[in-house]
Image (cartoon, rainbow, N blue to C red; front, side, top):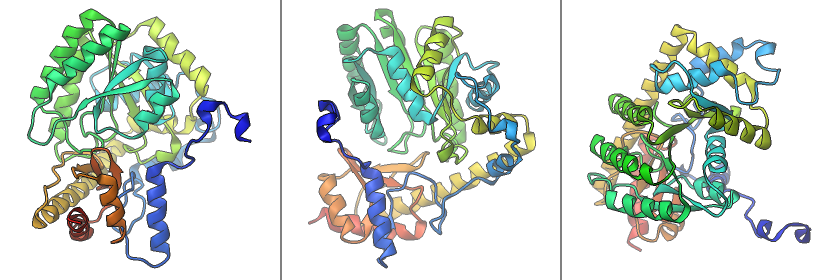
Length: 404
């Protein structure tokens, strides 16, 4: 059978490494082992059960047959697109140029097909969400990275300038994926000064060729700093409204509404009403998946018309943000108690711990029954699944693994 595959499709792994680690942890747990599993990328309560927001499920149960069964428009229900954009920028009257996508992953995939040619490269910050590399490779493209700032340090604008100028010179255009605020996997956001410096740089460079900034937004509802998140979104709105840089957003219901399996999101350029851009987005949808599920779009439309449901959802977001904050503080304190660097967190589901030999450390921690995700930059720790009570054991296992 491998002979039937073209060469580029041979030798691929059939299992995502994060899901493989999670599966291993769950198998150990099922066998009776005591396990701390910080590999998970979905929000769990302290009993290990998936958190499903009540405000969302109440609306889901109200959906009628005609809100679920028919095809949605290929580009998505306009009311859904407008509502999803308004969850991030309430003052906007329209979604601009936009299309519905199967989650944030679909939005990222469409952006590659729309703004780059095969063989070209996009720019993003490292560490990054692992599937960025898969999405780029599947489109025949490369990732070029600049460093995400360390805690307490400014953005390396010189590195951004160097890599952005190089890509503009080589390919005549630039696509930037920026996961801010509530960066995955560090849990930290850019400062206002960093955002201003980056906006000024991108505005300057846009004179050299088409420059698209895509904000990958997924975790902004889960933060200890909601005012800072709002300020960041306002700053990006100002950059988009200026019109020199094409600013868009990858939006998703997965984390925000705990509708992971509904596969619903959008790629939106709220400050553009360009007909050619809208046609390109719609055509990409038709060529990739045609129509996205109607039910989650109907649900969001209901949500945006129901003030009581919105208040309920906001209260749930506050509660789970407080849970994540408590977990982050517990892990930070436990790490420092072991003489290790802490884990500063501002928002999202993860933190990244800098270690040398992360893959070796991960294996040694597994021997202690403690699971995390190794990356080139360190260990990704899922606060979304790590209980406060498990923080000391995690820190102890990390300390032991690092000194071997």
